[in-house]
Image (cartoon, rainbow, N blue to C red; front, side, top):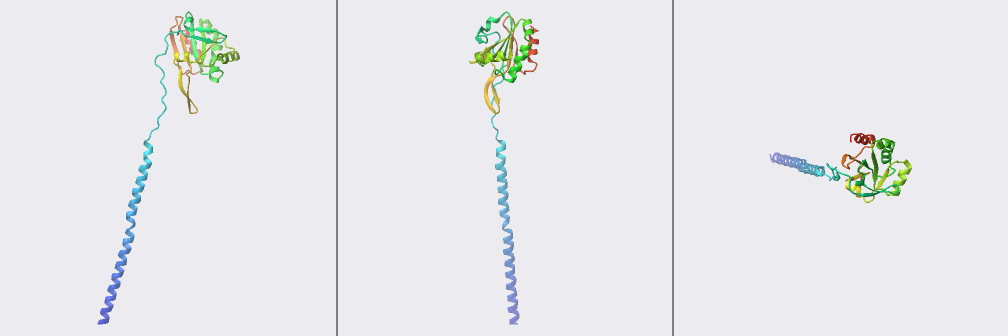
Length: 220
């Protein structure tokens, strides 16, 4: 009987040990659960941190709007230097129709095409009793070469100090290959024989512009 009781005791001890081992195993298996929660929090935190830059907006450069009214309403009392060694006071041009076309730079593709279109139609301008002047910031020497190269029958006005350009408000902020600078916005102004402004063109497209000018002059 004593042997049986001893065996039963050893069996009970063995069962208790196996149960305790099973509990330890289950505890070890359950331990990773809190880690999963921490990893979820980290993922959420990362997602939130990534979402922040999306709300950031970069500032865009502000471009001055085009004026609703021209800077001048009549031929201004400004004296300027021209090709052929001349000087002209614009207010003295009354008695004829006057075309002033502002262009960015001598001997560049767009400016050359525009000036040559006007040259080719110059007899029509003459027939309508109209004088034409091209205007840019280039100096007189540059103008003389430009005029001679393409045989322009009209004079070019040199405005290196931008006095005339500012009076007509044609200086604008421009961008080329990411570089911003101030330059002439291609523009044309038409005055009647009383020296009053009758038509202005801003941000001119070269193709067909000479004909646009003539159409407006024919309305005067």
